[in-house]
Length: 561
Image (tube, rainbow, N blue to C red; front, side):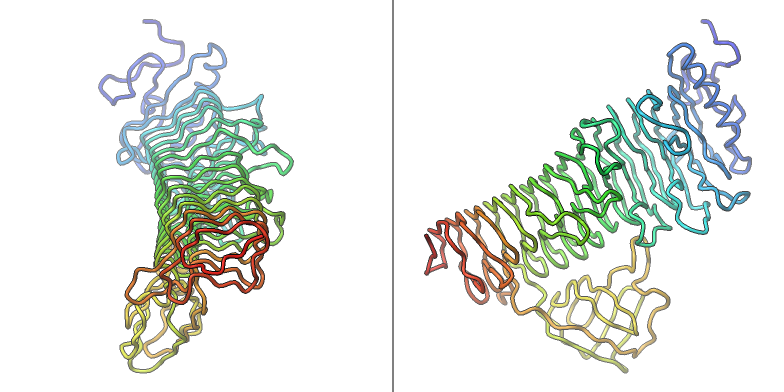
């Protein structure tokens, strides 16, 4: 078999990828994997050599890195088309990033960007696979957040494949690759990335994918990935040009996002499909659609279905600044610290009514406040077939204490003299030891507190308060309905929902509420079961106007045209 000049065949028996004339064993090309030698220069030379060969003959090459610890120091590797990087397994082949010789270098393992390298549709990365290795970013120390301090940071990737990677402790986003066309991202474990994100940057995610560079369609699938305790999002998609067309073609399937600031965020896609995901224990929302991205463009046309969205510190699903439509269907949305579903608009983003929103066939239960809260304007919304029960758990009155009965740990406050309603303080901001912290849940005498930020081991910004330090807990809102309309709502369809409380001590005060700030104009409201709540079936601080209301069990005086 002919061997291209200047290259050696890999040694036999060195791993599953080390076979064939176009596979290079990294150990034969200057990389040592001994954990001490800086392997970055040798890796860059090999990538350049193989990339040039690909340009010459169109044949992709693979770098196979056997088991070992490969030290990548002080400089990132500029990647080339047609070059793949394969390890012997995420627990066997480790790339350890560090910058001791250049404290300002972000040192990603591999990157290729528009700003540094002129990446574009015509100058893209093609036909590359990255698989079966670990990236440890804990050794990168920077004076401030740098968006390039990623594990992988490539832009304009065509026919890429990223799978079976473990990326952790990077200063910025773990997997931060933008504009992925005909690309698959699967079976990634991303943990504690974005550790330098301070709440001001919207980067620092587990998986962060910029979108829009290829035009109105970007065919990208993210599947079976797990993202844990990352600085902002577990997974997010962000439109990179304010005037660009939000692209279709993106799917997220069977992923797990836990302990991040947001679980999954849609900041500018069109028709994003999210199915079969688990979004739990995130600090703000399990699923977020808003104008928080750099271009201020929210997603639209998306579908969230078959997901478990629960135990998030604030909200299960939070959607705002979108023109609509959006579909949230067939999910379990439970035990969140505020609302199961919150329709809202952030200041600075678009404020127009969201149209054609669909909230259908979901289970909303045991959320601290409303099951569904419409806090910004809606037009032609459909709320149908949902089971909304036992919400409004935040019932405990104001409380305070100090002295011998009060003690603290990194994640708890205990007052042995208290007799709190279990989970009656869930989601509250409290003051303790001079600091504000959030309650995730409580027993009669113990408050469990949220970490101060994703990845933190403590709720406190500096030190745990001393025993006996005083605390204050605010009271609870008087009304906590299953469905609350607190903004202008035009032509809604609300039907076939069952909204009730089955607990011995009911906490969900009403089935349906329209507040003084809300309106319900020309609604089609029928066949809802609203009986069995703590106070009444409905509360109308603003009477609905027009429309057709009938067959709503528990609502005796049905308004109509």
